Amino acid sequence: MPYIFAVIALVIVGVGFTLFQNQATSLVVMKETEVNSENVIDVAKATSSSLFDFIEDKVGGDDEASDNPKDIPEPPEIVAVPATPTPTTPNPAPSAPTPPAPIDNNTYNNGTYYTQKSYRTPDGTYQMDVALTISNDIVTSASLSFDTRGSRSKYSKRFASSYQAQVIGKNLSAVSLSRVSGASLTTNAFNNAVNTIAAQAS
Image (cartoon, rainbow, N blue to C red; front, side, top):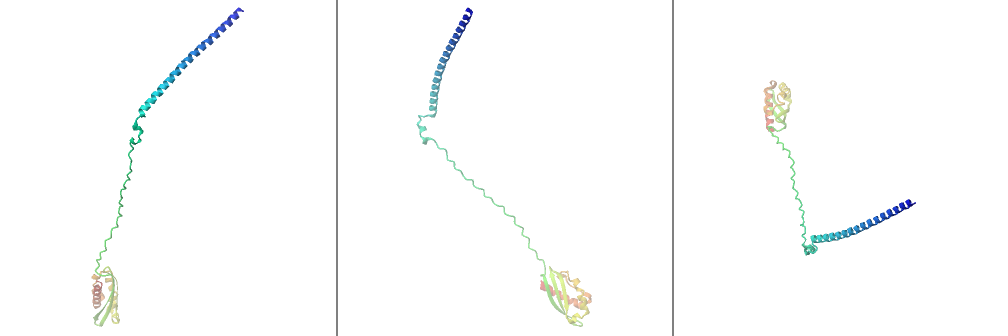
């Protein structure tokens, strides 16, 4: 029994000691907290006061020049200068070369010419009609006819059937027949007709 009382007494003493120790620790912490809080408030006050003084010194709240907006220089006005367009000169279209004028080296004018010649024969006087077409000085066609008496002559008929081969396709200036088919008088009359046509065409 005494043993039980001793144990209970020890427990009571231990609990009391623990409670006392905790209360003492709490008081110490509260004191430190109060001290730290006061220090923080003092530091904050000092810091805010110093910061306000620093800003006021930098900004210059008491400077009269800062209160006058006219003393602040205005930024220079920027004037935009329009760019002058560079004139462009269109390239002229190449002109077509002018063809050279045709050179007319023809001796005779183109066309169809007529003439009539009379000539004497042993049988009498014959009449011959001659027509020549000229193109670029070349005889391109030839025709002839005789009167009634001349158309009955065998010499006239021979000449009429043979002369074109020596005339057509030749230069008019080079046409000069020589006794075609033995008809010398008819041939001479034809040559005279060619000379007359050449004069007409010149």
